[in-house]
Image (cartoon, rainbow, N blue to C red; front, side, top):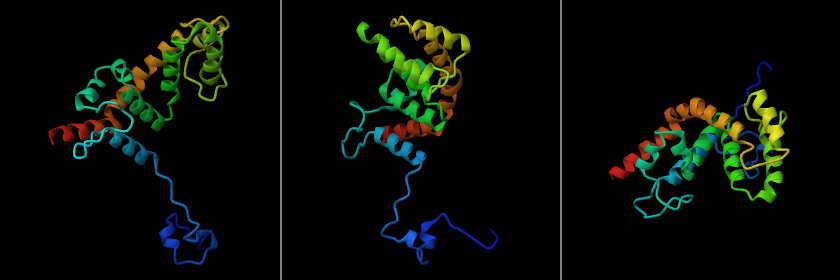
Length: 196
């Protein structure tokens, strides 16, 4: 509409008389994803001055540990904090279903035999089924093969699909992760803190 200017900045509208923008009812704007990730990563960095430990880690995260993540996807995924940071990166790329599926498969392999059928169905419906909400990117043959295997589930029935997703992450997402600000900023912050 010509002549109408709407501002997305609530501070610019404070002086105007709009009942919807009353200061008392105005809610805080949600944090952006980048700010959430930055806060999460900062919680992983040791607080040297206060002696506090990171909130989500039993041990302090070291620069050497984070450097090891660049050696292989296997080393990254073997580390709980590495899984979390990589998962946040995948969320930023809208492909978090890959690590969620991979982790679900790892958990599935440890499942007691009497619970295999129930868990296999849940994983299949969540990730493998062609209309799954978090459908993973696997070929038709692998999808059909997995569908047959879960009818008589074994601890290895998702192995083929899991290998496909691992390879996809290793060749596609992992190299981008190593070049991402999420990884590089974390590594730089940890290296700077270790010098203090």
